Structure formats: C-alpha cells, structure tokens
Image 1 (cartoon, rainbow, N blue to C red):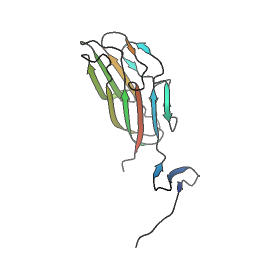
Image 2 (cartoon, rainbow, N blue to C red):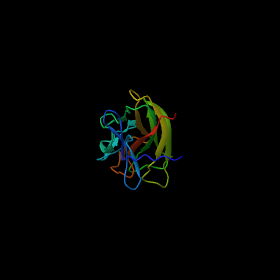
Image 3 (cartoon, rainbow, N blue to C red):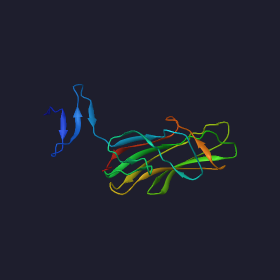
Image 4 (tube, rainbow, N blue to C red):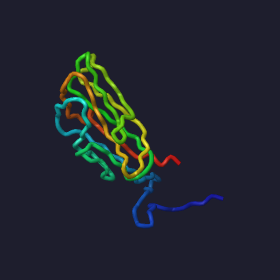
Length: 167
C-alpha cells in the first residue's frame, strides 16, 4: 500500500528549516557551501597561503578572509576546489596549488611554464572535517621569485560544499 505525505517544509523542533519542496516538486535542502575570490592584484613571493578577500557567497559564514581558512562547524565530508592564476610564468618555472587540511598538504596540482602565459592550475579533493577545529585552506608556491597574481574570478577561486556524513 502506498502512502502520500503532503509537506512543503521540514523543520527541526527548534523551528530551523532544513528542507523545502516547491509546487513543482523540486527539493531544496540547506547545505553549507561557499565561494571566495580575489578583488585586487597582488605581487607576492613563494610560498603563499591564498587569501581570497571577496566572499561571493558563504551560507554559514565559515570562511575567514583574514586567514583564508574555511572551518566547517558541521562534521562530515566536504568537496573543495582551489584555483590560482599568475599573470606570467616562463618556461623553466612552475606554479603549484595545494589544498591543505590543518596546514598539511593533501591534494596538489603543479603546472609548468610553457606556451601558457596565464597558468591557472586547479586542484580539488574530498575531506572529512570534524565540525569544530578542522580547517581547509589553499596554498600556492612557484619558482622564479615574486609573481603578479591577477584579479580574476575565472582564475582565482576557493570554493566548497558539504557532501554528507558518509553513513
């Protein structure tokens, strides 16, 4: 025997909405997610903890522009992407972008100079975070001294979202 439950909103007992269903049957769940980018050019030496100073969106306000860290306050698995863009790189140099958990490199992508004068390596990965003190940040290193980092939402991004508990 089939049952039908008619509902538009599911709430926690404290009144916080966790899920809505619109008239077309589309489900919208409250999921932590964020996207940050840079608002101005920067010249820096290597290595550098990436400080994305412009928050495009952050549903839970867990990203800190001053430290470049995303510190999720909900335990579970998260998917993150880091991307960095240099203005130029010569053929004998490299640009490396890493995702780090609590300061330890976990995922890394290296791009060497060549025909691309605007390298934009991108790295992504899935992390388990404890929901209190674990943080994720991006780190960039490059050879050849100081480099100019472009203001470019297409090339300088740090973003992530909650996947679930995995159980």
